[in-house]
Length: 183
Image (cartoon, rainbow, N blue to C red; front, top):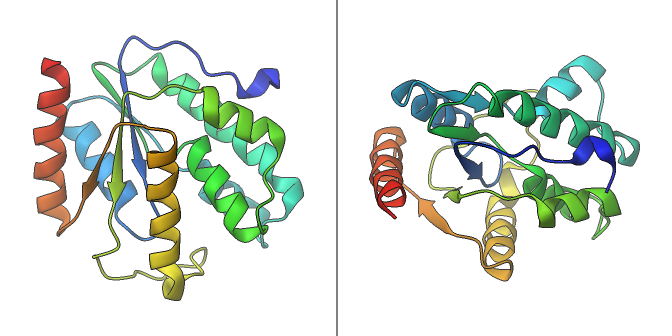
């Protein structure tokens, strides 16, 4: 695996907000981090594309992966009980395969399969689509959601599907985090 894609060990629980675009991942990551007075990791692809100012290409995938894991590794050292990740390399893998007809760089796949997270919150598509200059698939949310859920199931990763409005999702997430902490 490329050195840059190595995940640092953590003294906290790593929680991933996982799912298609415009499903409330960033909002929930911020809410949970504020509630637990800890760190959250933004989606690096957004920052990368805003700087680039044009569409993503296959050549951008490794730099995006490097930026994502670098941000996560930095936040790991500052986090308290939890680190909330508004995406991870497994999500990038799903998007690669969706946009590039099954293609994903080997280094990203390898990292996605070896990085460890304690829990995933799969954000449902039952919230209204919010357009912005980077989101581009309002009509294909169901397909993407199924791809995300299938990935979690195929890898036997622990997850909870979060549906409902912003407050309901936050309350459900808090409930599951309390249960996770007990175990």
